Image (tube, rainbow, N blue to C red; front, top):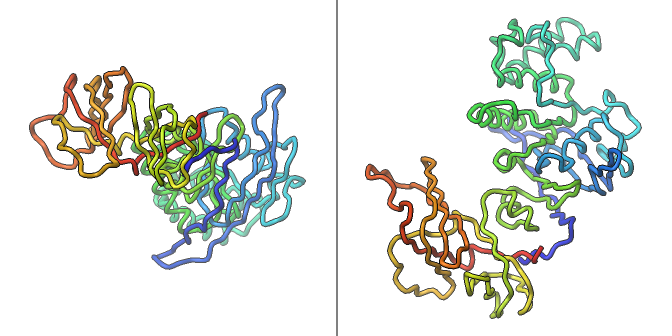
Length: 395
C-alpha cells in the first residue's frame, strides 16, 4: 500500500501473544497503558510532541528511535520521574499523573544497573521487600523464587563487584519484579553489554516476560533488539511517533522514509510515476530508468514517489540472466564497488553505470572452500520482483 502518511501514522493495535509457563498458556497480567497527547519541553528543546499510543496488557512493547528522539523522556513520564507539560497517562483507564512513582505499580530497570555495591545479590533483590517490612520467611521465599527466575540462585551471596555485566542486569530485573509491578519499564538495559552477551540477555528477557506475563515497555535505539522480541514497536524521531506496528509491519511496510531507512538496510530511489496498469506501477527513477513496483493502491501518474527495496530482496549474479518469462522483474547492471564479508552473508555495494549505488545482501546458504563467488570490480547483474519493492510518498 502506498504510504503518503502524515507525521503520525498509527497502525491499529494487534493482540499480544500469551504468556507461557511450562508450555501452557497463562492469563496475561499487568496493565494497559494509555498515553494521550503527551508533550514535554526542556527550555527551548521539545522532547515530545503530542504523543499518543495504547500499550496492551501483557505486551512486550518497544520504543525505538535514535538518541534524543524522546523515548526515554516518555518512559520517565510513565514512571513518574518527570511530569508532562500536557496530556494524560493512564493505567487500566485510571490517570496516574497525580501519583508519585512508588504508587504507580510501575518499576524501572536502568541502563547502569543501580545496584547497591555493599549488599549481596540476595539483599539487593530483597531491598524492596525490606522497605515494606515483609516478614523474613516471606522474603527468603520470594527472593529465592526471583533469583531462580533469573537463573542466579547460586550467586545469592556474591557482591555486585563479583558479577559479570549480564548477571548484574539480571539482579536488577529480579529486584524490579519482586514487588510484582503491573508494568516493567526497561531503559536501554543492555546497551552496556558486549554484542554476544547482549543477544543472550535479550533472549533471557524475552523468556522472563513470557513466564511472568506482565507489560514490558522497552526503550532501545537498536533495531535488531526491537525486531527480535517485541510484540509491537513504536518508532520515534524528533519527539514524534512515526509508526506503530508489529516487527513485520514496521520492516516490510514502513510508513515513512525515516522508518524505512532507520529499520534495517534499504535502497531508496526518488522518481516519478510513469504509468499504472492495475496494481503494476512503473516509476521513472533518475539514472536507473524504469522500475516496476506492485501496489494495491497505486498513485496517479505524474506523482512523486520513492522506490524502496531491501538489499536481501535483490539477486546478484556474475552472468547475464536468461530473458525472464515474467514481466514483473527489474534488471540492472553494475560493478562491485565494495564487498563486505560477514560470515553468514556478504554485503555488496554495486555501482550502476549512472553512478547510483545499490546495496545487495547475499546469504551464504551453501558451504564453499573456494572463497567468494563475486569479488571487487566484478561486473554483476541485479534483479528483483516488483512484488519485493514498495512505494513511499516523496518526503
